[in-house]
Length: 134
Image 1 (spheres, rainbow, N blue to C red):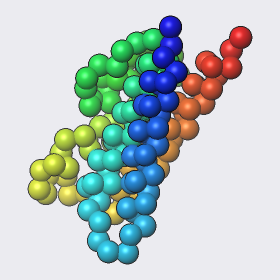
Image 2 (cartoon, rainbow, N blue to C red):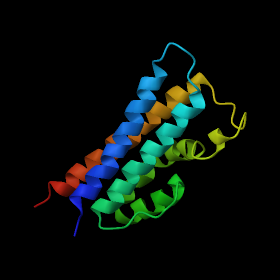
Image 3 (cartoon, one colour):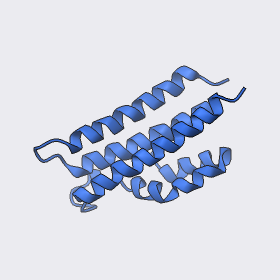
Image 4 (cartoon, helix red, strand yellow):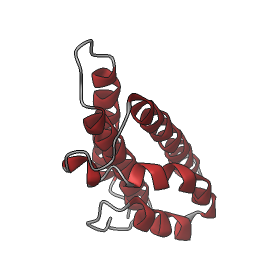
């Protein structure tokens, strides 16, 4: 049975991470682009885990978006369209913790926010499709 409270908690956490990334991207003082990219990766991860919870699957304890994609694709083959975005976002799970590892620029940060919105929109639409079924 679907735990709607847990689903909402995952979605709320994903929303919080994306809103935080967007807010930090508007700051007038230098904000580390790596931090914003990390928040985008985290947001996408939480949306995907919410989708798994909706399907009565306990999310695996992983930050690897490609692994989460495999689980989601087993439930809905349409998830494959997110692969290009998730490949990019996946790199931001760990590497931003290491100095100069990625050379993340302002353009990477803007792309990460855009990709996360694509992931968010797709998953929220799929969740809506499932929850509206009789």
